[in-house]
Image (cartoon, rainbow, N blue to C red; front, side, top):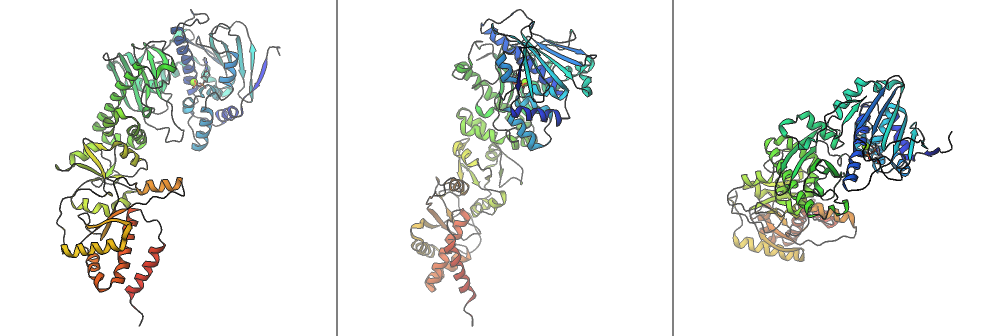
Length: 616
Ligand code: ADP
Ligand code: MG
């Protein structure tokens, strides 16, 4: 043992990760190569950026290439780059500790899903460790780009720890030697490696040489013309650039010269990792200037809600030395944001029109992002609203429509868009609020996601039409001929007076209305009142939460119960008072507003007793 050798232990979580990598990930082992080539490519992207910002790098003439060497006899595969390399501290922090939160997230995901595909490992920023799927010993020879960098060797068997040693003679960058496991020797075969590079890494932005022969064509795919790119190339690029394991659901590839020079190639994924429980994802669209990567997660390039998009934006107008800190404040980046987010929204709009079924599937997974956008992205709110989808009183259960469909179906004179918030389609359909709208053939949107109420609050209108909850008082309705004899005006007025007196402060007013068809009464809430769902949430957060909602009571002068009540209030006032209070409570229950049911139940009992008559 040389006296320069230092031994280190892996952090507990890295050990767990390695254990999982070695013992549980059986399929897709081949993706290790993509991960390691992607690390080499990242390291050279970083180097190019450092050079571009006029810093002095060690040995600047080294070619930015990736060299792979296979040795069947020795059973090794070597991957070498001339990127930024690593210092001693970096070796410790990048390859031995949890530099990224990804380790935990990956372990968590693996535990939960049971069968985490190995191909997902890169997504969590722990791709390096995939080397141990195929190798039982990994050596990293490195020298950092920094002037004071040391020439080092990192070695590990991927079990409990690693050693760092001084080994003179290293050039800038990283040379990774994989000592392949007995049963993984296929990766020491040139033909196998060639095939893998062609599958996974053909479009890497640096030359890849295998045993001295150039394999890939270097091309910045986003700078090429659409006609020259195959679907497979697009897909491979998406998986490479987005560290993704799924297929892209949608893609947008465009270039523009004014107001800014832009070449953009961005994708929407098929799977939403936030829904799979991986927490908030980082922005996945990298920023380039003339093929040089400036930032892989640029702040402010896209609105926050578009963080699920992946790909590349290249702008020749960008100064290379723009720092990550000033990026968000840069007027140029704001302009880019503006242009690109509008294009992306328009892309979704067109795609949704072209294939509504596909968009439905996508929307069901990604709706929260769009809703977040409505609430937070003022500049794009109106166009974004066109992308929202929902069920309504005119759609089949499970089918979705948008505001544009709604407005197209609305009758000429309808100036408002009606909606109702509730937990499920069933509960909404049985709501008394819906009766009048159904009877008149007016479409009502069903909002059933807990966040929908915030979304409507932020949106307020669409296409100049106000969004109006049908629980609210003050919705204008035309007359509607309904079957059955109604109370006359004098009888109605007298009954309303009686009810108002009996209910007192609990109601703002009692009036006959146009809202009801089958129900006797309905409680309408003021326009600024919360929905039952929201009230429930407030209460869950604060047990002392109280709010007095004063309702407007509307009666149905055609309903038999109401008509009988009008007679009973003179003939049997005591019973009429009980019925009045019970009707009111029933209306509150339907409105989700009844706070305390004790009175309701004892009154109900009294009413039943009197309905059954006195025992003989
Ligand atoms: P990620 O690439 O997502 O950061 P990895 O587990 O693949 O996660 O790599 C961990 C870190 O190790 C990288 O972020 C980088 O700092 C360092 N690293 C890995 N490979 C290289 C390399 N070839 N050159 C320089 N640094 C590297
Ligand atoms: Mg990596």
